[in-house]
Image 1 (cartoon, one colour):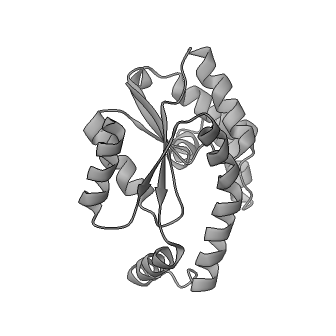
Image 2 (cartoon, rainbow, N blue to C red):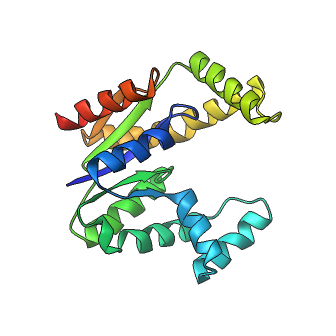
Length: 188
């Protein structure tokens, strides 16, 4: 049974690797973005509340995000493990996740930290922006996103590092090579 969080900077390949890891380990991926979209599409009470914020261009508050994650982690398909992607993003959310998991007498087993050189990430993201025609992803914007990630994520990683459950894997290289590095690390 594996209960994990995948975390890493924009462009490190979290989404790609999360899908591959979940397939290999037969556990569901739990992405807050997917949870938001599903709740909004289904017009749940939480989805309607989240949509009020997103329609105004605002971030969905922790209280709504926490409730959605709590509901998702109460479903039976997570009994044999799960992979969280995009949550928790703050120390307050770490504390809330601890409470959610404690109710089920469980905890995170591993925090998989994908690492990558910022200059390489900038090149990767600029290439992706060009492929997808995203003119808003300039080098300046990308570097700002990386700085914000560093500021917001460092405290979350520190909390889990103190618990001794952070494992770092280089997120750069061939997709298959990165997947194999991750699976080898998780097997230890």
